[in-house]
Image (cartoon, rainbow, N blue to C red; front, side):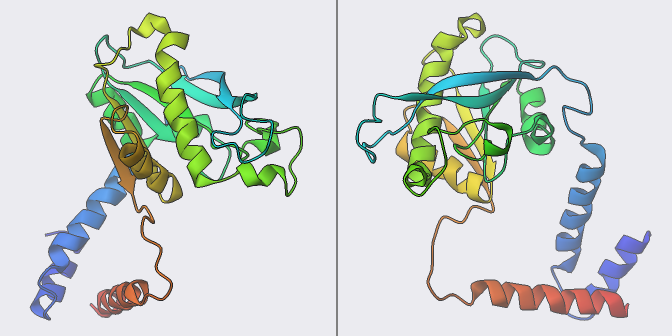
Length: 235
């Protein structure tokens, strides 16, 4: 029995009945992180493109509804086979990078012969001069930096992509699956809810979907984890 198994057995004997399952899950996650590297590190061909995105989907700022800006996105078709699904990596609060194509989304594309796309969140590519809907960033332009606008960016991108890249033969039967974690996870889920006609499925990891003003749930969870950590240190 390895050290992992011995630790789990000791904790189980002290009343932590589910600890073996939890530790096994953590152990498996750690192994996955060690094995799965990014598409960039494997030298898979990742293409960089720009998409003519709508500046204002809701008429928030007068005169911008018909305007467009160049929104940055990534494309990888290494594993794609005709008729396969499209996995859409949802960008979040940082610039989109080729190294973002790793782990789950890379595994999914490989397993299901999918096309892998990643769309940068509006405004968050500013450090590279990308994906900014307006000429400058100020209090007025930041009215356009909302999750609602971001969801519609994704929806319009999904709607427009097949015509922009006809070589992939995407059609109304193509399954689009959005993937995101944390804030992008929330965007992924909201995209599925708002546009079920376009998004077949959504993977939302650790997505903050419910805003609660006063909640002790996180503190309770943290307390439990600290107790488990202390028990592990003792054995």
